[in-house]
Length: 339
Ligand SMILES: C=CC1=C(C)c2cc3[nH]c(cc4nc(cc5[nH]c(cc1n2)c(C)c5CCC(=O)O)C(CCC(=O)O)=C4C)c(C)c3C=C
Ligand SMILES: [Fe+2]
Ligand SMILES: [Fe+2]
Image 1 (cartoon, protein in one colour):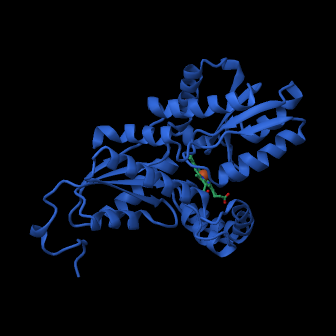
Image 2: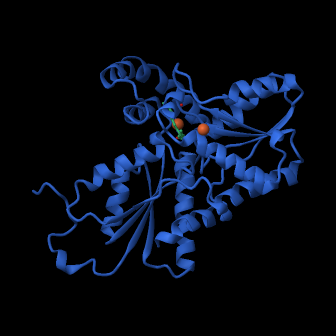
Image 3: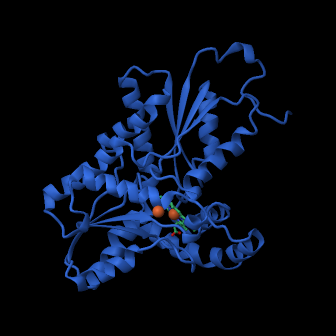
């Protein structure tokens, strides 16, 4: 038994041909929409020091003493509401993205490139994804977290998980890590197309709300660039579509815990709009490359209810870019310089 792992003890027999592996990753979901599976998932997720930066011992006491006793039951109910015959929407959509990207690479005769998907928390794990690539004899890995806007809790944490696996490998491959693509022109085009299609089908809303996943304000104060990258994405889409700046609002959603998060909050903003005479809106969520609990439940249902209960009349959620062809093209464009 050796401290470092390898797929063979005979390095002469293989890996002389260049083979590239792409590891597409996203956040992850529980294995099932049950309290037990959600508890397992949240225990892993919320123990990540990149997600919650409260001093370790205190946080682990709060997490195991309070949060993991209450939240899993509530979250499981929410997951039950979005679960499909294909399981978690986030995982299923990532599988579709993986397949479509692989097909695109083959159609371009890039047959030395294999695409595998993995999740930062839960399954399929980053370790399983990296092992699958190693089994295919890859010599170069491109890790591609599907978070357009870099943040420490998402992108940074994915890097930690990859490093934790590779530090156990004897033969570490050539490694590339994509740390974001918030202003990639074809990503902006794809977002702009999805909004333009919505307007063509349903008319111009009074406001378009760009709702990004939030984070504690403290992370921004300590140097996390995510807030600024979100503002840049919004600005580039405004420019691309020639929108009136006044007709767009950037907000932050999915607050967790009692601390102050990035503002303005999506739910409070939506509750305040009808009283200002704004009763017809469309909402888009550019930080999510795939629809998930935070869009299908929070934006499609919870926030719709908040807006309508406050006197709103028309509320349209514009789907995440998911497996749109122009989204797959954008992902390819991000990868292209490394292939
Ligand atoms: C506790 C702090 C959290 C931070 C910081 C955070 C940042 C962050 N998250 C995403 C993307 C996703 N988050 C999702 C779910 C989710 N997020 C948090 C907490 C934080 N996120 C929790 C507790 C949950 C779980 C759901 C719940 O119990 O309420 C998801 C969806 C997962 C799914 O299965 O569908 C995504 C995607 C980003 C981009 C981000 C960046 C700042
Ligand atoms: Fe989150
Ligand atoms: Fe900023």
